[in-house]
Length: 184
Image (cartoon, rainbow, N blue to C red):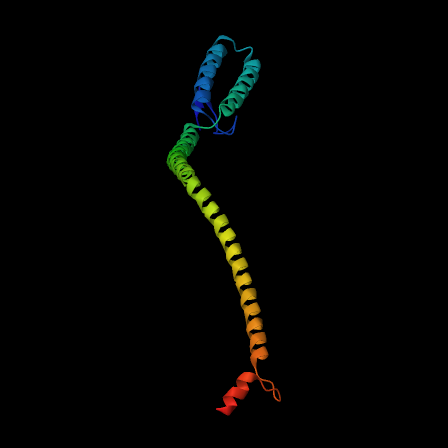
């Protein structure tokens, strides 16, 4: 139990926590009250009531001061850890950004190279297309000549067939050439 200006207070009587600031103020107020008591004994009841009011106000004020130093240190430690984690995340994001920039630069260079290559190949593509068209034309001409040849060959076969049938001796008909051959 703390003793202030000759008074004994159980811990936590005037508030949940008694802070060092509150104890100092209570000590000062207790000293003032003790001196006042020496001067005036007539107002002792008023003095006691005044002391109770002052101590109550000081207790409330002490409780309103917030958490103690250890809680502040704990909070500071948590914030430092959070800052460290955020700094690490920032470094990782910066490294990733730099890698993506390098990849982008490389991709842009590759695109430029490919565009240059495409431009260089445009005449080759045009020539290829022209050769394809010429091949189609030549193939069509070949097919047409082949068809004409086949039809000409068939016509010749028919004519040869007609000639052979016209030159074959028919039974019962004697030709001059057949008669000469049989007399010999």
